Structures are given as structure tokens and as C-alpha cells.
Image: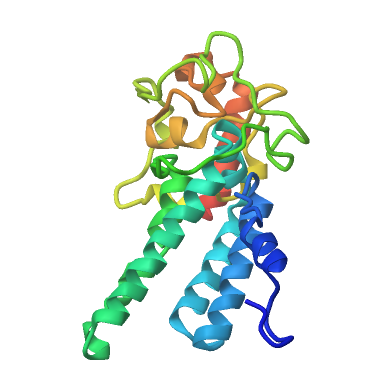
Length: 250
């Protein structure tokens, strides 16, 4: 409070207390807030600190798989907030452990390894429950795939994410050439050469997970392509084969 001409006035204190906290509603806003967190970490802990380095690596991973993050956002406009909350939760756990530890080797650095969170986004298995006190605006994000104020739609015959619960669906009729080989990791294809995957229709591409891994989720943005191999045209089969060979390096 102000005293003898120093400090902040009561009106100034009140205005500071009323500052709004904006939750990220797009991938770009998520990246912006992560950059703020990294900047604060550099100020408090140093530019080479564990937290700032891990956040910097996370930013690079999101940039590399931006389309996958945008697709997730198109299905759930609270996803950027949930992802940021997951990051914040881990950072707070690490800081609490640092506070309580009596020696450096008592701190588990793996708490803030974010690779598995990115993998869950790529595998479309990410889930995070926001606190009951949180409030996420209902506006559709402006930077999701499809352009301003547009959400990806799923073709007729496939329920939209808003109208049906999420469930796992299995492809019992795959192309043998597309199936994962012995010792091959599905993560090799996650977010790889996305633009080289053939379009299924004017709204989505052929789903790599469905045709390669053999399963996917009912609310997948590419659910229209969840069909048995008999219903895939020869042209699309050849185009998808080129994509698979490129990722495999054949």
C-alpha cells in the first residue's frame, strides 16, 4: 500500500487484482504461453536450467507436430488449456520436490520429461481433467485446422466428436503391405510426412493409424477413411503406399 508517497495506491492494487487470466484456445496461444513460462524459468533459475531446457524442447516438439496438435484442438477447444495444465502440474511437482529435498540427488528430473505427453497427443490418447474451478471459453479457436472459426467435420456415416462418446475401433481388413513390420514402432509414423498422406475426401486425409496400426478412435478427424481395404480405391492405395515407403525410407 502507498505510504509517504511510496508503494502502490489502493486503486492500483485493486486493478492488479482484477487482471484476467486468459486460457489458451489455440496451438499458437499454447506456444506463446509456454514461451512465457520458459522466459520466467530463465529469469528465476537461469538460461541453462532443467525447466527452461525441457520447455524449450517441448516447444520444438509441438512445432514439429503442429498439425496433430491442431487436429486435437479442432475436436476439443479446451485441449490447449488441458495440455498446459498438464505441463504446469509437472513443473509444480518438481518445484515441490526441490523444496522438500535435502540433496540434489533426491530430486527426480524425469518428472518433467514431456516426451510421453507429446506421444499421447500423436497417438490420440491424451486425457487431462481440468479442475472444477477452471473456466474455458466456449468460442471456437481461430487457429485450428480448417481456418478461422471452423471445426473439422466428419463425413456422413461417422458421428461427430460432440455427438458420440469416444471409443476404440479396429480395422480387421488391412492392406498387408501397410501393416507394422516385426520390430517396427508405430511412433515412426506419428506426425511423419503428414502432407504426403493422400486425401480421402475434401475434408480429411487417409488415417495412418487405421491403415497401419490397425485401430483408431471413433472421433478421429480422419474417421471417414476408417473403411476395410476393399473399399479403398487403387489410386488411393498406391498414393498411401508411396507415403508408407517414404516414412520407412524404402
